[in-house]
Amino acid sequence: DWSDPGDLMYGDATPIYILHPLLVKRIQRYNPEMKWVLLLRNPVERAYSHYAMERSRANETLPPSLAFVLESWRLRGHHSDFSAASPLRTHSYRLRGDYRRQLRELFSSFDPQQVLLLDSHELSVDPVRALARVSGFLQLREPMDATALRRMEGRQAALSTRPALQGLLSMMMRSEVADYNQLIRMVRASANTRAVCDWAIATGARGSVANG
Image 1 (spheres, rainbow, N blue to C red):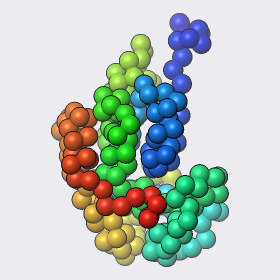
Image 2: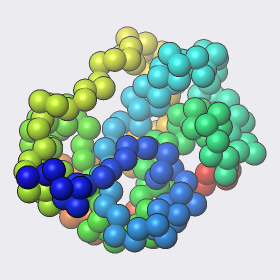
Image 3: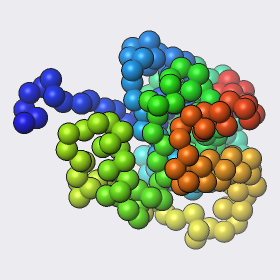
């Protein structure tokens, strides 16, 4: 019986929480026992999907190639701007694909056992298995219902239909893609999160939110 509010588990889905170290630290102060479920997607595909979403919301007017090239310039001066209209929210297409840096910041505040890493591809092709992992991680008494899963993939235009843009973005994000490929191999091999933490810390970080 889940009618008792005391039995409810509350969650929030906001990708920007992991983007900035200040937000991670705020959450750590609010609840040091917080659990994190992170969905990992190819950074190039993620960047284009983000662009298409902002374009559909009328938050983006530039063509994609220009938006990606000018990203660092657009983010300059907004590294701690969390307002609704901040370009850190709307135009951080490539920045959000730097999983290595974000994981390093997250693991500096939270124990790796409080973090579950999921492969976006697994969620797409086998949602029952993926949600079973989430249910176990959250220690739910009943497994999550995969039929109620909100499927986001396919809503935006596929990047594969634009090979020139895909090539440009892949070149610009080659380091992020290399990190992602290594990371996703660890996730698919069922490596424990402690091993991922050691990898993220050992490899360091190329940049920060402040310098874009």
